[in-house]
Image (cartoon, rainbow, N blue to C red; front, side, top):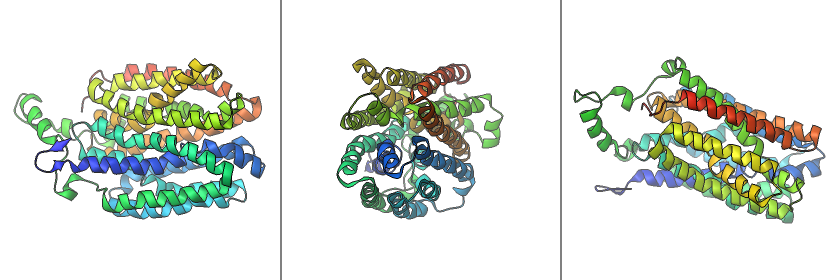
Length: 420
């Protein structure tokens, strides 16, 4: 990780900053949401489906914003807007603590979306792709592990804050923590491209030398290897549509089980404290899993790595169905650790490895919209399933089925060797 000329390569500082920022944003907003379901429903007299709709509205708004992000990102000063959003997002998030009815929560979710998106892992994936040619999977894995670390630490913190101070005050405290932790990193550490610090991407010199000798036998670099495909070219590739399908189905399956982890364990006879600890352990596994999966992409390629992630998702879902067994609890931890890394690690690396960086924002923003559709549908389905059946288990059975379908589709569609 060192550069002879500059000591530790600055890109690793960007990765570290991204890890902390994701821990205090995604790790809180998404991965701690389940802690609020039961107390908010009990206090406001609403159903779990109505509460889950907060995540659904947020996901639909994110999906809509992702559709325009490709073109919008080319027109703005990204670093400046990341600084602005880092300051505004905690204020908007804290407004959840002021909810008087659930409709206000839906409005807050819509307003929160653009500020959250611009400092989310979606944007950090692009930034890290700019900084790294070599060890890109590791770098993305290290940054994205922040959501697991944040979830691991903050789930226990949130649980205790709710018990001692109530859910409204908990939202206010989390907003303050976000502001203090994220704003300085955006202002002083994060930079969009290596050129902003007078550097070149990590490993570019080695790859250029290799490609000049071996890529096409003419001593010239293959432009597809370095640049990739445009969005219009990707649209004509069957693999793009296979990835879109699996983005929707896998994220829907993942959200169906990990967003209901705490309430399902509580419903199954475990104490609220144990459910919170189990959620924290799972988030710790998620942090480790993201780095591990990133290394798998570097060493095994996209096809094998993504198959492993999907298989672990299936195992985790089965664990949720039989969660009263200690072996099943271990399966849940594995499922969250490697399976729930799909959206954060698999999707950006697949995009970069299969389609390249030439038009990355346009291609990945559309795939992000697909994952947004999956995460939007999951809370509606799981919430409605619980309200009708009194259990999440039927939803888990459906999630396991679509996971198996996704594995088959990816095996058929992804090339054995990454083209880019």
